[in-house]
Image 1: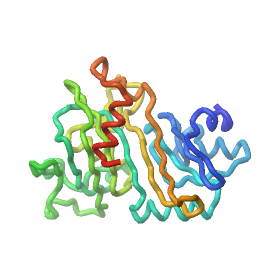
Image 2: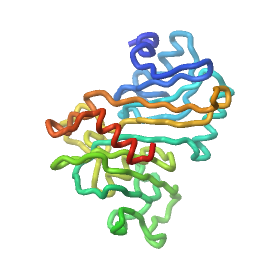
Image 3: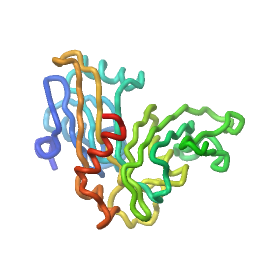
Image 4: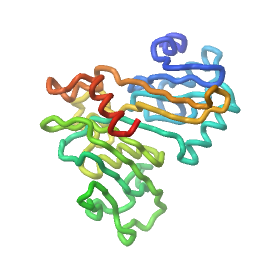
Length: 254
């Protein structure tokens, strides 16, 4: 697929400064080891894009790219200051999760540059009120990065749950590692599911809210619904996707 085809098929919104795509799973944004990516495809067609943020190759959904350097700086500063409003959807193994939860587990980088919780797995505690944490005394003797993810449980089946998530921090692989280390890995995540029985990772970048001074009003509120393949692990017990999205928005207070 070339850039004009990709843009036409997956465009969510665009103005003179930015464009947003509903990226399919399996396509990189930029800068990873792969055959091609969105930035390279655009460059080959004569358009320069500046990624405002990144989502993993295996993650589908909303990705925002700037076409103007001034807008790029304004928007990336909001991610750096953690004022960008982000929401994700995930299908996870095991439905035994509270209605709401907070995963407050610092991350570190281990062997082979792999992201992990900055503590032994057995040191992770659950408060009984839906908060996962580790005591400071149990942190590994290595550099660690405070990392917080809020979630709401949108729906449950016998062995799966749909979560709406707000990553307060934006660490690499944060949602994927947080969920796996509390015992609820994302279905199809190649970091934690080696079965190969799922054709994609069921994590989706759903909503994004930023301040955009060049717009009237100065707001950028974006959303990208997941495709039908995202819901497949729920099987016949899945509710209507539109109903699930409405419920997720209510639970997150949107």
